[in-house]
Length: 103
Image (cartoon, rainbow, N blue to C red; front, side, top):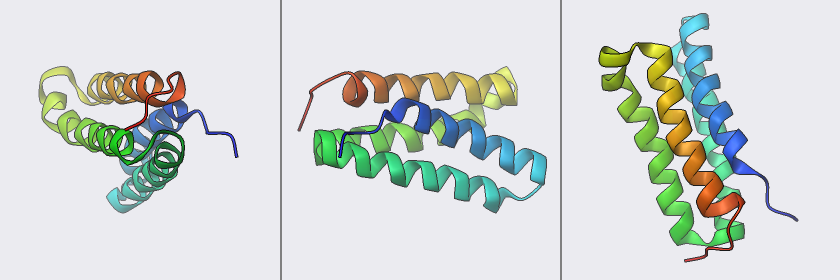
């Protein structure tokens, strides 16, 4: 199986998770979207780049989710989510989608 381009999946998880939670009023729904995209991405990273890259990128994904909350107090909710999505999706693109890095 060819590896999936994970940057768009990361972006869909972070943006989609936020939107699902915000507009449905159910935080658990947003968490399910976030977790689903994270699981799909983590599997792809592990298979294509190894457990080290998977760990770094999964940590970045979770960190982006966590940092977006306090950052929202300074930037606002959507700018915060979009900023952190750019960080996490950019890392996925650089380390996994367009690289042969493996560790």
